[in-house]
Image (cartoon, rainbow, N blue to C red; front, side, top):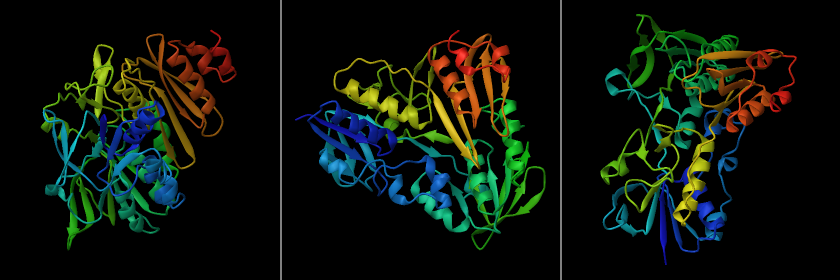
Length: 403
């Protein structure tokens, strides 16, 4: 009987094994996770879960009985230490598991501060998994002082949660502006103003020189402009890196993640990859997407191809971020944009439409679900929108779909 092993019990891994069973695979399926809990949603960790608005049980992607009902062998708290692509085995502790096909859905890991600048002090957190959220929750309380390192979406979401809990928040971003790597200046301006309105002290063009500790506990920070601030805890949000350690040790090709072909197959014919850890062909280059939709869509595509399909993975990029009472929805990829059109709305409702020449490539929509949906449909259909009409709030967005 054929055996498919999946390493990584996150969103991609859970989606892949579910799709295998849905598509009729009746062989043996093993899903291996390093964490001691079943697959769960990660986005709420830094928001609803940390705020206490979502119970642990609501995080889980499937009911407890799903895995035994579907005859999926779920191994938890079981980090894989080695892959032998010649023998077609994976090693988990003292156990050696044979596979016919293997899928890597190992995700990504947060960048951490080096110990040389105080990254190993108590009270310094990253936000990636359930253990991180559980460790951070007791210190995110009213009256504390927090330093957020990094002005990307991870850092801004952490700042929003802390500020809502009554924490005095200072955020430093070494680049000239927050969100510089991922968004236009207009989006940066919007979120800078939003956070300032909630009392967050955002310092751009300022980095962290080192953390200061007393008795092993972080108590302060010296910034690159020479200022020192008192802090009770630090949240590091300086990006994530694909988890490629196992793949690299197994001799698989690595290129900003585990390199796969258009079907999701790695450089080894029996090994596949999907989700945050995988980079795939995209136009004349390669792309790696860090998002829940990509994890699900790519994993399901790979599952079908593992069963003999020949489907080319075509991503439909979309992302979201929740900060205070603002929901940001992003459609498309803004790389290479040449202009940005602002579509104003009422209150905090607004959207920014990115164009490469006369081609619509992305939309950032703040509390504007209609703008997001129309932009997303246009982008996925390879259509554009007249920027003059987009900028006119009197334009019915549905009319853009007819052009």
